[in-house]
Image (cartoon, one colour):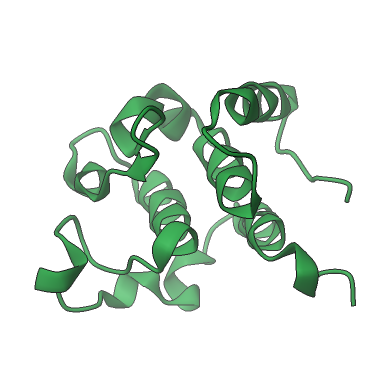
Length: 128
């Protein structure tokens, strides 16, 4: 599959993150792709995803450094990782957030790249 990148830095950082991931399956490829997509997420990779523990960090959604677009990237990343759809709290204790709806996430210039992340996460459904 040919992967769509926003710029050369995105492609370079994606490749680097793939080598640092605990596994290189569809979950990790989509995660590396979204972590390396925009400058805010690039600057806060360790705040969003713990590479050593191999877990997302939902509390990142509540951080002051987040922009509206980086929040969208994080929401999609978290949802693709494990279906997470709450706002910065453990899923068991939080009701689902409407901000995870496609109409909210895809309403930005990153929509083609978000679609690419979905294709990385679900490769079996993209070749039909």
